[in-house]
Length: 76
Image 1 (cartoon, helix red, strand yellow):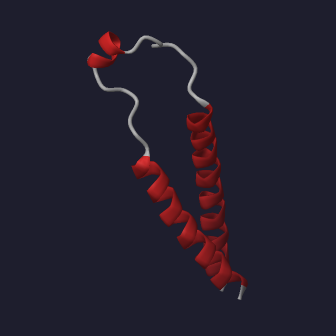
Image 2 (cartoon, rainbow, N blue to C red):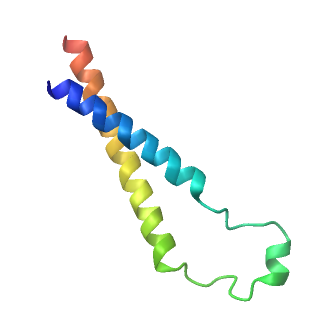
Image 3 (cartoon, rainbow, N blue to C red):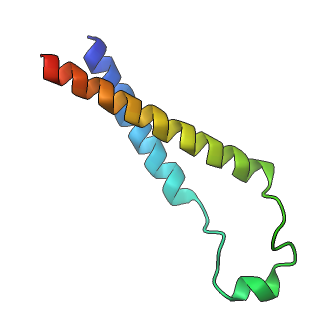
């Protein structure tokens, strides 16, 4: 039962990560960003910082669940 619940969380997490990663807008637009951007070395806004931290944390959780599922399958 624990393995099934863990697989369900893993699948939902993977779909959510794919959605977050593909919905991000790339920041660098090539050489045109030098001409149009006034705050080239400015700090990122709080939403982008939150998304970066959340993406990194969810990727770590994803890998930890993958290791746990692998350990469950090896011992079974």
